[in-house]
Image (tube, rainbow, N blue to C red; front, side, top):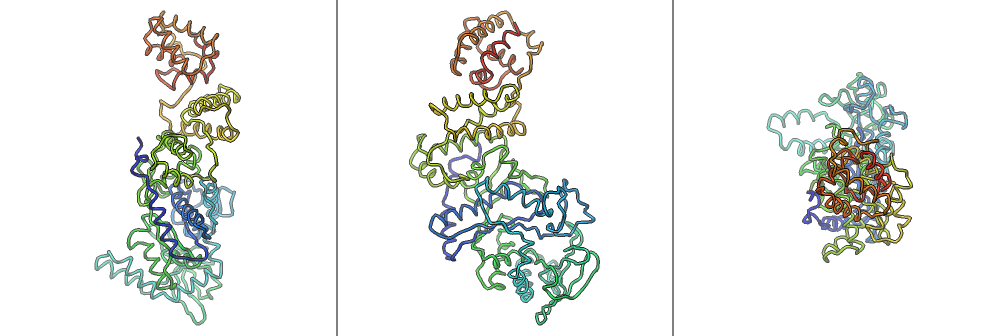
Length: 555
């Protein structure tokens, strides 16, 4: 049993407890925020944050509250490093905001917009519908400009908060050095009107274009560009500014009136950037700040994902191989403080487990009262779309894996008819509904993508045009008698899956061929391997007449 599916993990108490805490805030409209720096393709682990926010919103709305989710695309951050796939020149664009850099793919208005759109277009598939806010455009608003003024007017307070939180674990020498560096520090940087940069250098050698002074009487700031050396004094409304990232976060909370925001463990650790932001909310903006929702990361095969680490498995990559409902299920069935681990090789098993859970919700499988209650509460939250009044059977994923690989040698109508037959047998149906039929092509496509990218040698099915000579040469006379009679049966009778299995077994015994040998011979003739998918369904999928001709070709 995969680690992700152990029964003791199932709990929705964290959802109830969290929503109860959020409800205590009591605003006219609850706003649950999420955000991500647009520094590259975003990995699927970020969808955990989106799903947590979506569930909070759904539960608030179920209790009759006005609630919405917002996703802030942090595209105003400066370029600090370049993913390997990025073709822009580091010398030309390092330090420029992502919103100002061109899209080398040529499809979006900026590099930041490209990566934003790549992520946002998958939200509906995962059942999320947040309002999308561009950080760069947010900074153009009067509300954000006023928040910048508030921060500049409270520079001393912000300095003291940062010294308290950032330097708390420093030794005496490090703390003294940090305090000294903060003497002339201001919480904002300026985008240089000459070179377009927000900072000089990249990771490890960053020097921001800091504001060097601010006069609240005339609202003028002075600044120096660390890259080209340009310096000036100008009215605040005449320059483009961005707050330092630890200050930017609470400023956005204040402007957006954020009620609640989930955050990964790197930001949510005690005394970290989230706690720093809450302290600034209290001392600088005069309010409590949002409800903090810390969560553990999603890992891929036991590894932390991240653009900088080169471990990026995108939401689109997930959708290519697996239903979004499975991801929601993996996230929601465990406490948010526990890590999730995507094991791509186990996707077929995990889909089976989720669909058993789905059948429990619809009362189709026997389950104890506790499991039924859990399914009743949790299943609607795992569904990306609204829950159907009736159960919609799905083509078994493991059957789809085999079937999808035969689409090049079997016509589409035959493939679909075989899928209908299997579903009728699997679910005891007289007819397959149109809703179920509509899902089959999607399932076949995902199954094919999965086996191509993550399937083991055992999962791969390839039917050669002819039986290799080295396999034919190994057949004994008893083997040939068995194959000849089996070919005759396939040409004259129409057997179902189970009948094929029993016919092979009984005929082999009658012809003095050990059943194990019979199955081995058939697998080698059909797919040049010693084992493979269950023979009954596989032979019916290929077609008994086709298989008969193949058997005759080796006699």
